[in-house]
Image (cartoon, rainbow, N blue to C red; front, side, top):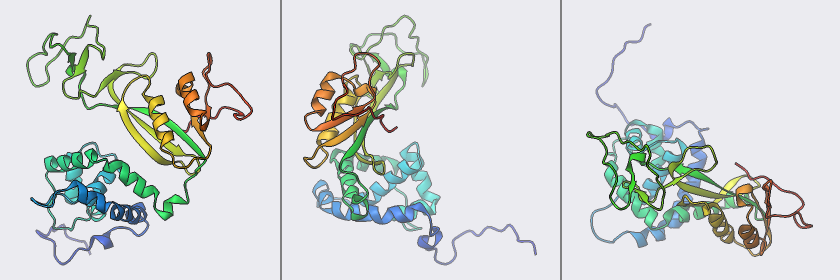
Length: 303
């Protein structure tokens, strides 16, 4: 018998989001780890928020929503809120009931900034790594560090002289602007919409873009991230962040660090060899890391 295309105007009965999620979905294994980490962070949440005033977005739900944004590469908070309106899987993971209203995107971003300013992102990563189910997977001897460019959400048209000079853009919301013959650098120019963005390119022959720089430290047993940083995009940012992240690795035993040839400088190698055995891809000329009895061969970084 042919089924009829008839749509009900309302939900009839009770819909349990738990029953809608497949038993073998990866988020089912992730959610208990996240909830245990958030439980350990509860005292830190109490210090960030006031005891009076209107209730804000629960920080636990906000962090779960940010995880979904990263897992599913959702471009913006506005699209994330749109997904939360109709995606039952997302509502289940965040902890929203079927009938609960979704937050305004402006309120969501303001609450997100409060958590980031309180350094909750690092605390959340540390709480995940401290979980017994995760801790036994981590290596305490062999690590790798690397950096990457994060393209800023800022137009090249916003990269204007700091002294206010320069031709204004053409009329309209996104007016044209002629850069021909203009020399631009980070010393004389800055983005009017993202002052922290820097004009940067990572290799010769590539186009320079407004960027930030992200850095990660990874343990080599299961390739799990143990630390992460964001910095200004500069020529020394990778090495400076590498020194900082390696210094934050717990324990006083000697460890090994794998990295690519961007780290092969005399300053970085000298800082590392005090307590670390660096294993890096060497530059073809003027290599700072020389073979020795305690460094048998170069080990390329994990990308």
